[in-house]
Image (cartoon, helix red, strand yellow):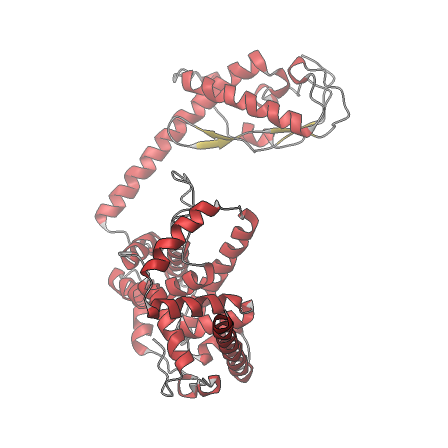
Length: 191
Length: 217
């Protein structure tokens, strides 16, 4: 605490206030602060190091399973219900619409194992007439976002029922998600 | 109350702390005990500064089951974040102790606090008045005269400009010397002392003004 030889009442009161703020520190604060910063210091003890190692293994396993399920489920769901949103990067095809579609990460998908992914789509030409039956009637970004929310919900439900076995062809590639965030010139090929 | 008597010039130039230098060197080399000593020294000061700048916390105001932990005490979050940053820099050899550890530590803290303040402004949302009244009533009923005076001072502090409040909080909550504050804010010492004096004067005026208002009521 700051010492003040003149015993100025205002200064004393400020020191009391500061002391009350320090006293308000929750129990175990310094323990938690020290522990939280140990990894940054490169100094985890053997027990904590093992915990961190196990956590990393769990995350890796969860991630691998999640990626497979996301791909498998989304491929089927998109083919059946949302042709305009087909993962063109995965299949090497352009988007089956005249609209220039801007796809961006926006919708969080909480997955089975607690991980979160994001996929979303935005339109950049509100005046264009959508040719895809999946986007018929959508004339504004708001409409598109609402439609996407609904479809992502469908996707998420499909993910939960997706089989875990994945063949080589179905292997997930992270760059597919990158493709989703890249504006693409529209194709007149409606297939 | 005469705020001018708190110049405390005798601690304007704090001498280097040889023990701290050794602790920092050891911590940077991975000595967990040394690191723990550093945390013990400073964590509560960083916490007090963050708590004063951001308010007593939001734990009662957030919706139950908030998955992102916004209900956790932001001051503790910031304190942890500050020490993680400091530990990283020490371990990477990016900080060399030259008697300026505290200004550096609290500069990191102030940056985190400002970030949190900006984040709160962006995400500000109305709070149910019933929630607020339910929280305020018990604390007021249980308040002691000392607690009342501290609360009045806290409220008056909140009415100061950010610059005035900053210098008072760095001086008292963070317990920095004027020389250290000068280093932190990169301002001349004389300017800083004058700013502190003016800030105390404003604080005193706010407190006496409040008392006069209560008398009239």
